[in-house]
Length: 165
Image (cartoon, rainbow, N blue to C red; front, side):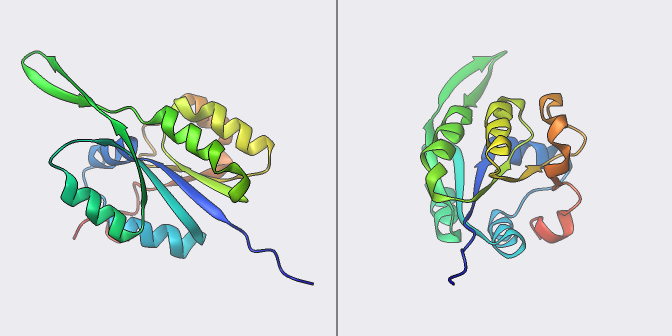
């Protein structure tokens, strides 16, 4: 009798992850975070959803070399009170890819505290495919996700392990 290999995929909202960790007062080492997901959760594929900004090619190359499968979202620039902001909301792409990849994994990890993923989390749980929701900041996440608290893993306490040295 052959043993079934559990395939675990992670889907990361990079903007939510990055900004939430920065609000905690530290910067995430994305290379170490990838290794953490592989070692701790035996993740076989890690999808990172990120807004594409020209000039950040070195970052994208680093992330790909670290092992991430990068899914780019076109970004828009807008001006608010003389400051230029870049917007690249990746929520729809993350949900879409989680469903495109659905037949290929047994369990999923969603990395975000954003309530926009409530429908995805709800569906994955009903199908028995939700492993964890990695919440970047334990003090700031959507109330829509609270009912899934048993799946929560908080990153903000892991600065020594996952922070940039």
